Image (cartoon, rainbow, N blue to C red):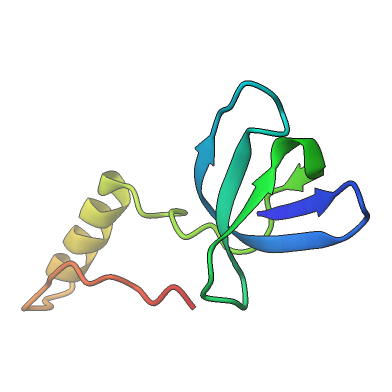
Amino acid sequence: MTITLKNGSAVEGYIFDRRNGDTLANSCVRLFPKNDPKKIAIAYSDIAGLAFTGRDTAAGKSWEAWVRKYWEKKQAGETNIELKPESLD
């Protein structure tokens, strides 16, 4: 996600949590910035816009897609077919 702030700056990262408060200033999203391992929180009241950017790590990862790939490999004669996670990079 890319979050554009009201001050004109933008933060790109992975949103992992959101917290609802009594007001927009007390509500926030928490994220891991793209190039920083430290978590940050951004108040709803500071957000001007949101955009879905970057790679969707869930794209093509449905059970149906996995089964289709499994049967394609099996029909091609491959052995030791297993489910392995892909790199997030």
